[in-house]
Structure formats: C-alpha cells, structure tokens
Image 1 (cartoon, rainbow, N blue to C red):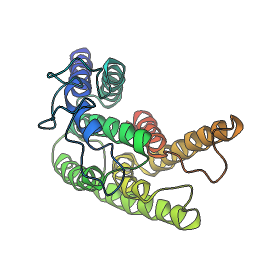
Image 2: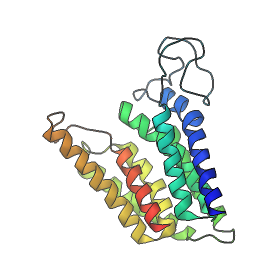
Image 3: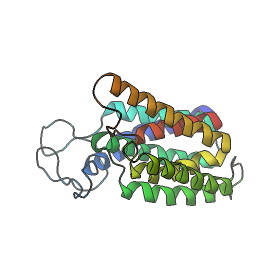
Image 4: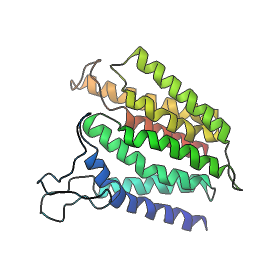
Length: 238
C-alpha cells in the first residue's frame, strides 16, 4: 500500500507541475503594482489559471516552467509521501507542494512573493491542519503548529527590520506558513527547517558575491531557499 501511496503522490506532483503551476507562475510573475499578466509572450490572451505552459494559439516557446519543474514537483511529492505515510497531514503537504513551486518560480523571476498566494496559503494550511488534527492517525500538534507560525513570522520580521536590504517583506509573510508545517512535527523541525533555509540562502548569496554577480547589499530571491529548507525539515521530521 505504501508503494501505491508514493506512486499516487508522484503522479499528483507531475500533474500539478504540468497543469497547476505554469499559468499562475507566468501570470503572477510581474513587478509589484502591475496587473497580472493576461497574455502569452506573443500577445495572445490567456484565460484561466489552469493549463499547460504553451499557448494553443501560437507556436511560441512555452511561457512557463516545463517538464523539469514538473518532475521536481513529482519528486518532492513522492518524497513527502514516503516520509509521511498514510497520515491525514500528507494531504496538506501534497497541496502545498505545487504552491511552493509557483512561489519559488515567481520569486526567482521577479523577486517577489505575491500576497495573493502567501496569505491564503497561511489560512488554508492552518485550517487544513486543524482538520487533520481531528482525524485518527495524525502525527502532529495543531496548537504547537500555530505557536511555531507565530515564532517563525516574528523571527523573519526581526530579520527584516535588522536587514531590510537582504530580506523582502514577502519572505516575512511566507514564514508563518512554513512555521505551521514544521511546527506540526515539533520545535526541532522548526529549527532544522529554518536553519536549512538560512544556510542555503547564505551559500547562494556567497556564490553570487564571489562570482561578481552581486554585492553584499544586492537583493536576491530568498523565498526558494526558505521553501527548500522547510521541505528538508518536513522530510526529516515526518
């Protein structure tokens, strides 16, 4: 049964990467204050938020993430299923995985994490984990998850105040959702996932500085490293 669970999660991740990620990642990848993109690079209108990353009205290259991103999403979902097993919270992690891919893609492209994703992500994750806590077989604590969300948000807000050039406020808004997920399994998971994100982000910044592509004060996308760190923390804790 566990093998089928992992296979099903991988199929979900692949389908999500091919159909749930491309259009939101393209439409939301605009500078702050600008309206969402409503056309493909060739100018043909894009309707809706679900579908592949290729415009059916033209032969232009795909406008969003392709097969590589879908495979990465499938791998993440399969790993989460393998680590979590048939517990109620797995459904929450599988829903968060495509959303995390969209957030990482948008942050890498335009250096922002849209409120339209980060704020509902927190509300949805808190609600779904609260529901999971009522079901038999869960392996976490909802009150602790809420406390961890508060602690994570406060920690990243303090970092933002101390160094606003190195951290965006979108990162502060993403932190409570990641704190919810990690805190579900305990404070060691919160520490591990948060530290992993900080370490990955610091290493990436160091590489950029040493390669001459940035200075110590150049802002860069930090959200993807927060997400990767949280994923690692979840896999270890689950």
